[in-house]
Length: 173
Image 1 (cartoon, rainbow, N blue to C red):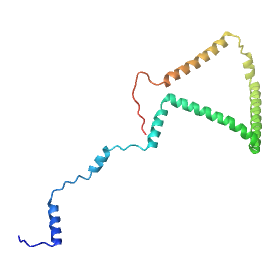
Image 2 (image 1 turned 45 degrees about the vertical axis):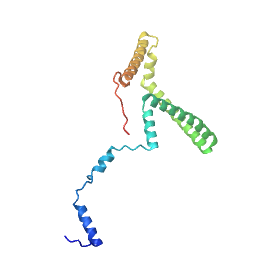
Image 3 (image 1 turned 90 degrees about the vertical axis):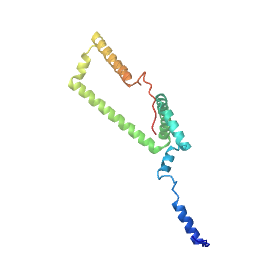
Image 4 (image 1 turned 180 degrees about the vertical axis):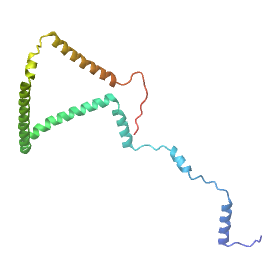
């Protein structure tokens, strides 16, 4: 080996060659993905608020209360808006009057047709011949009422939440 001074290019080549011989300590290609999978970034504030509200509303009692409140508010709004529109808008008032007259005419025609059918088929005589003061009529009415109440209680028992099974429920977003 000689002690000759090296030019800049030769010195650069020597340094690069020496560095390329060193062992590599770089992380693998999947290292960044593995690290980032463990990092939990906070959710944006609107998303967190939306999820918190959704979980709060998902409780059955609150959901029923909100649905009932919505129904009442919508009914009150319609009860105020529709009469105001009918009285203040001539076109809507005319359409409303025509619709009511047409509907009442259809109901009248249907009632007359049903009454004619009941008389001609003998249904009116059959209904007239049933004595309502007999104990059988009262027993039939009681049986119908008891059957209806039994069905309502059965539906209540079938549709209620299970008791004694406290399993936590987590909502998926």
